[in-house]
Figure 1 (cartoon, rainbow, N blue to C red):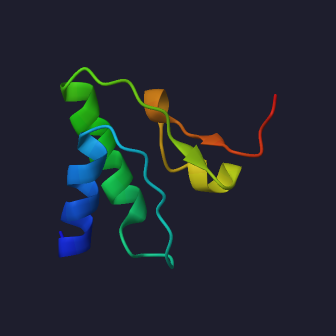
Figure 2: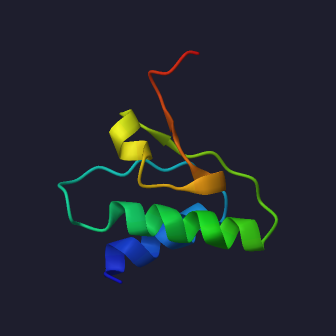
Amino acid sequence: MKEEQVLALDVGVHGHNLSFLGPAGTGKSYVVSEIYKAQLEKGIKSQITCATGIACSVYPGEKNGSPIADKG
């Protein structure tokens, strides 16, 4: 993991809100998945939101994200 990813993981595991921005292939989904997994292990409930449904589709099963525009 890159230094920035480790920092984001540390911040996210402690329950802080984060926003991930950047080009494709930079590891955003990987870090979000690792934060989610670490929070589950600590008993912390969290919600993943995404800008689009396509972005959320990379989070399967229980951690499937919700598009922020989805009001339904």
